[in-house]
Length: 288
Image (cartoon, rainbow, N blue to C red; front, side, top):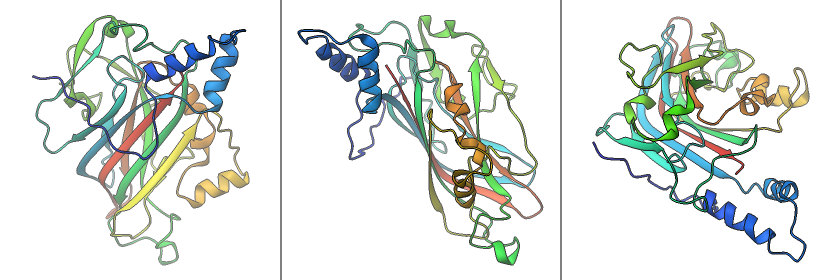
């Protein structure tokens, strides 16, 4: 098997690498009176000058009522070898293997996050729709009364020692639920706060539009500064977008640790309902 090459998506905006960020930090040290590290970090954060990883998955998956499915799992976050943009077609996998961990070439090219809470932003992009019919007549074309939705959860590796050396991370790990019998003999995931809600919970990532046959592209952005309270105008606005207010309380991203994986779950409830996903992209940003 061959290590997969990242495929970069043109974005129209510059996304710095870890090497770029380290270089900028060094420039601040060239002042006649060098800036303290804490101030440099604050400046970098204020500029949203962060490292990132993204994984785009293409391929149709359908979750029918009562049969939740995992659409995708990210690579371990902020681990050497996962930075950059990756694209996979889940219907035509060719046995790709990602080479992760080990020592970077030099400290100037890659450095692991040193802060206790390094993650800053997550952007989810979802292309999906429901069964295209049903639901209360007054709810059709809205997110009210939707029983087809997505949730996100965190899976934590049982040990970060996996990455003290270079390891092969098969692409099959990005699409196999952690409770599958043949996940892998080498990697163990600890599911963190995994729940299977019967109805869309306050932490819902995104509902589908009710009775809409056409694929809709949703973009959801969470940051570590989010602090939405139940019943607030921001919470009401989130609900109007088909998103749970608690997904914007900031706890999800602030609790992330280096090496965590984010899983995207598809759910549907009640006879006839389904969640049909065509494509998804998860982008995660962290401070270096």
